[in-house]
Length: 260
Image (cartoon, rainbow, N blue to C red):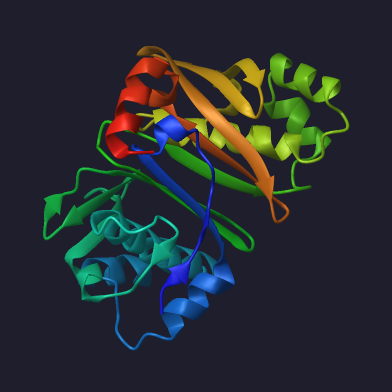
């Protein structure tokens, strides 16, 4: 039986380039626990065996299985909300550390060849969020945060003046602090080149209709990303798409080719 997921909505013109879903951890776990076969490669099983924390092991394994299922759904041109487990999972391998043991952006290989996709993954308590950019040039970052997790102390220490001003102007908007925190995390995943996460480096430049524009500065210069935010099932989510700020005419042309 297929696993049906909840797709997170993106603007019509971006559907050709990205797939992002959110699901309950228990749903993914129940789906794959009913399978008698192992869908992690030998290298993935070795990496999993090095993880000591039981809860993190659980998320690590389920996240990879979910991303593999999404990738094969895209390859079969089936709806992005459906995942099926099959033997092709063992042809795919996802690595999130390099040969020196350093964390890297997740990379997918198929039969040893780098796939033309980018990946992002996040989990928070009961939810998993997974995203795929349908070419290596379409970077993305996803993040989820439980509503109520961000405290006033975190806001004072890690939120910029622009973000605090936005929160003051929308004090009745429950979940906005968590959306902004997830936006920072997602933007970091989409833009970083291996440097550590520094929340205060992300500057909010615009906010309109659940769509943010963030700039990020490091030694290589200033980069920008559009971030889409929302809330569902008590969880705030953010999807950062650096290419989302390109001219609409370019995106619309791709939408026409996709038939969306």
